[in-house]
Structure formats: C-alpha cells, structure tokens
Image (cartoon, rainbow, N blue to C red; front, side, top):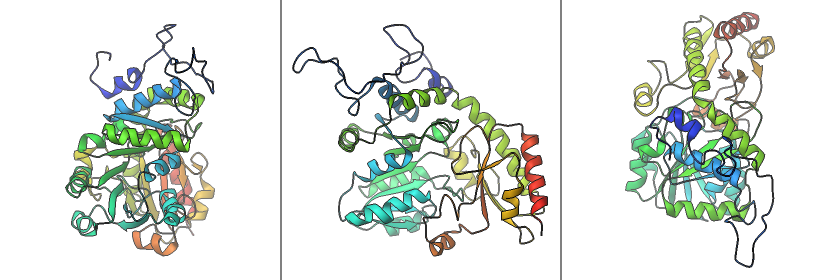
Length: 385
C-alpha cells in the first residue's frame, strides 16, 4: 500500500492502483468475457468475467479500502447491490427498514422478496427505543439510510450497529448520500454498506452501478458466492468509469457541499418556503448526531413551498436545474419524490412518514452558486398563484 493517511489521497491511489505490467497509472479496461488457461486447473487467477475481472477487481478493492471493509463487490446497479444483500436472508426472516428509504428499496422488498416470505417492517430508526422494541425473533437485519431519502432523517449509526450486535442480527447502511468521503459506517460498527454508485461516486450521470462493502470474511465469502451465482455484475468499462469518477470525488463533494450549505440557508430564509430538510442546518433533526458521525450535512436538500405556490409551475419554470430522476451528478437536479423516486410507495405510507405531495428534493451540483440561487428565486416567483 502507498504511504498515505487521508481519504482524499486514497480516492486516487487506493485499491489496485495502475498496471504493473506497463506502468500505466490507470487500471486497463479488461474487455473480455473469458481467459485462456495454460492447462486443466492452471490459470492466472482469472477464468470468466462474471466470476472476476481485473478492472472490476480494482474497483472492488478501492471501495473496500475507502469504506474500511474486508471486501467490496460491484454490481450492475444500486438495486442489484441491494438485491444481492437481501439474498443473504431466507424465508421467514424479517428486515427492519428506515421509515423513509429509497422507493426502489421498498419496492423490491414489497413486490419481489415478499413473494419468498422475506418480510419487512417500516420503523423510525431515529427513535432507538422504538427500534429496540421492534426487534422480534424473526428480525435478522436493520437496513438504514442516514441521511434518509428523501426527508434527510438522521439515524445514530453507531447505536444501530450496537443494537444489531446485541441482538445477533446484521446492520446494513445505504451510504449513497454521503459516500465514504463524508461518512464511514463500518468504522461505526456497521456490518454492510451499500452504494448506488450511479450517484456521487460516479458523479457525472453517465453510468449505472452498485457497490457493497462488508466488514468480515464470512460475509465476504457469502456475498462473493451470491454475486457469482446470480451474476448481476458490473462490466469492465463501467468499472473503469467508476474508478475515474471516484478519483475526483473529494474535490467534487467539497464544492457540492459548499453550494448546498448556501442553498439551504437561502431556502431557509425565503418567505415562500414552508419547510427545509437539510442535516447541515443547526436546527435540523439529528444535527448533532450527524455532526458526530459525518463530515458535514452532504449536498441533498428537500423542501416544501407554502400554499400560495404551485409546485407544477415551479418545476416548469426552472431553467438551469433539471427535473430528472437520480442525484449526485455535477449538474443540479430536482425531483418530486411522491410521483418520481418514491411513487412505488403507497400514498398512505408516504403520508404517514411525511413524504408529502408538496415535497421537492434538490440535488445540488457544482455550478456557480449565484446561478443556482437565481434559478431557484425566479422559479419560486413564477410559481406564485
């Protein structure tokens, strides 16, 4: 391993750095499905690219190092990563999930795994006493997002990890919103970390990928078997793009967060804004907990306009910020969770957890902040009825 201590350096030099054969500073794209063997049982360590590919292996080593885990695994999407992790469980098991999670996580549990009698329970995991009371003998894992999508709810990850260990179950954290540059759940005691690497890790809205990191060799062996057996692996070219994206994660996120803090303050002080959800604001739910477990509040903001403003007109009036699914790219994106990212969650469940029809989710990019604020200002003005 190279001589470095800081995450910002590990983003560039971590994992399997470069190519020892040629001296290339970038891991090559091994665009191959299979590998010639010297004889029966004689190979170079590579047999078939579903099982292992050198470009993907470099990415997997990189994310494992960044998260401080035992092993990393790369999948074709964030949902493929979550699906692989859920495949660790069996019929009759139950998974507790945070009260506001990505709609796709809810959907795969409710519409797919439910068919195999893997059940779930939605719990406000920020309420640790409630979480403890919710653990019954059939509960085998707690799956948490912090900050959660889309209300940016903060959960005490170290406390959740401790509760899980005391009950002999797994703790799983979706770290998509924060990335290992801002938050490292395994260092807080968590067993498994998941990323939709499509978002900040890739950072340029040009790939779809998922990553998983585990904290011990037993989990690593189990997940390696699932990855190979089910085959939802990330291809070599996207693995290469993702390594390239991760190299600039630090400088990108510094700018994302700088912009988000200014945008959150702008929205907080705007007379047309009824509510702002941003864990970097001192009066935000879980502010002190987030400050303890993360570097800052990240770059995602959700907010609601007051009743005098029409959100359809707001979305239509935006000229710079794009109305689109996803988040974490260099460009700013906005979405309507109730009809887009969380539409798969029934309305009564959305209403219960606070994902209202008026909620707007904003992924702040790295553009000039004055241009972003001007776009928000004119769109809010246009939305007034």
